[in-house]
Length: 377
Image 1: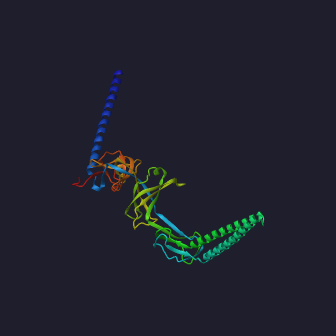
Image 2 (image 1 turned 60 degrees about the vertical axis):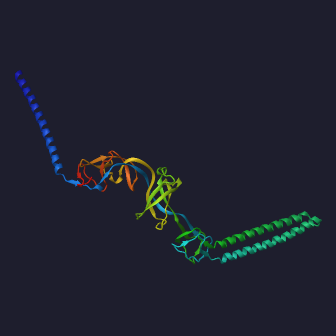
Image 3 (image 1 turned 90 degrees about the horizontal axis):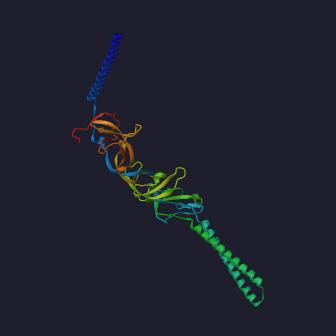
C-alpha cells in the first residue's frame, strides 16, 4: 500500500513538471509570434514622408520675455470746443477731417445781447463813478468845515461813510462791466490746439446751451496705446520698455515704448493701465485697435515654437522624431517669449538639438514611421 502511494505521488510531481514546462514553452512561442507579428506590421506599415518645414530643432536661445497687450490708439492731445455762453451758433464752417491751427476762429455765438450788456454795465460804472466824485467833494467840504469849527465831527464821519459806499458801488459796477466784457469775448470760439477736426456736433443756426460740445480737435502727431494689464503683470512693466504692435486687420507692425504707468488700479477689474507712445504715420487714426507684445525681459533657455507643443493630453507633450519613428515626449513648459518674430516657449524633457514636429503637421500616433525626402540633410 505504501509502495503504491509512493508511485502515485511521483506521478503527480512528474505531471506537474511536464505541465509547467509546457506552459513555459507555450509562453515563449507566443512572445516570439507576437514579436514576429509586430515586426511584420512595421515592415508593412506606411511610412510618412516629411519635408524640412515639418521639423523643428530644439535649441538654446536668448528668449525675449513678452507680455501680450492690446487696446485702443488715442491722441495724446485732444480738446473739445464748447459753447461758453448760450445763444445762436454762427459761422461754423469746419468739418470732420479739416485741419485747424491753435487760436484759429471756429465759430461765433450771436453777440447782440452780450454787446448790450457790456454797454449797460459800462454806463452803470460811469454812473457809479460820478457818485464817487460827488461824495468826494462833499467829504472834502465837510472836512474843511470841521477844521473851521462850523460843523461837528459826526457830519464828517457820515460823509466819509457815504464816500466809502460810493467807491464800493463803483468797484462793483466795474466788476460787472468786466464780467459782461468776458461774456462778449466768449462769443468768439477758437481752436484750443492745432490738429484735425474729429467730430462736429452742431450746425450753424442752432441755439446751443452753455458747455454744449461743438467740435472735437485731435492732434494725430502724437499717439499712444492705452492698454490694461493685470496687477501682477504690471510689476514687470517699466518705463522705456519696447513693444511691437499690429493694427487690427493689418499686417504692418508699429514700434512703441512705455512712457507712463498709471499708479492706481481700476476698481472692479483690478487692472492697471499702461501707456505706450507709438510712432505716428499717415495711416493711423484715433480709436484704432492694436495688439502686440511688450518686451519685459530676456533669458537664455532651451526652447521650441509654442505651436509645436500639444495639449490634447493631460500633460503637454511634443512629437519627437527619433530613429525614424514618432515618439510622444512629455515636457514641462517654461517662460514664453519672442525670437525672430515667433512665439517660443522654454522646454524641459527633451534634449538639445532634438527634432520635433511643427504644429502644422498635426497629431501622429506614437510609433508612426517617418522619413525625410532623399537628399535632405
